[in-house]
Length: 278
Image (tube, rainbow, N blue to C red; front, side, top):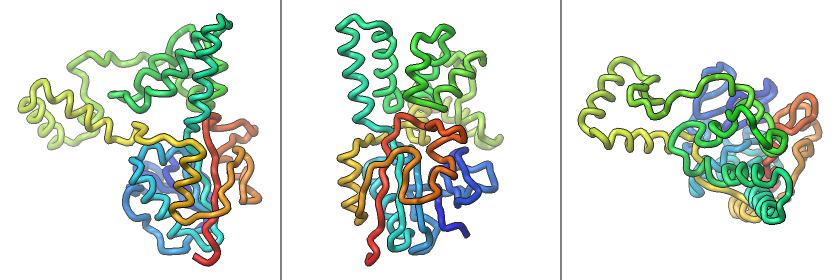
């Protein structure tokens, strides 16, 4: 088994790593709930990596996952984390706010985007939220700015703008959950809809908000350093996308693309080591 572990990998997998995620349709990806104990013995890995995972967990769940990462790391092993950089988002928002007041070109569209970046993924009640609707605009005013902040994710959504969005107000559309159910499940859902009436919509909102898409906690460098120290890690350093304690890090193309561009430019990258004696 590889000595490298990629948690919450999504479609971002590398054959040199053990890849694990909440859901998996890929035989190279182990399906596992990251809120549960990791299915590996103590000291199993030289390096553990997860990108844009912690923010989808409650603070207590995130701390538990980090303790599990420490447990499965070899003494001296490396933990690398990427999360949305709350400080960067807030500083960019304040800059945009000042630029609007100063009447600078493109400032209003930058401000609109940064408001979405700040709150949409914490408040949305349906997949994609307002961000998808915004990025599907035919004449997107600040496309280059958005891509500079969101990278590949923004490009992917913008390129899909020719695909018609569903009418979310249509009551006859199957819910996200119903569309994935077998016959028995669909019958149960019809019964719940009948039983709950108008409250059935609230049930689906609750289900969606617990589906893993929502951001439940945000991190800046200070908070993340404090948390990593609390779980027993040391030598905590802020990294660039292509720099690491791992000498061959860039060759894995997890935080960077093959052309050297950054996969998620809005990220805060932090690495820490498990103490040799723990």
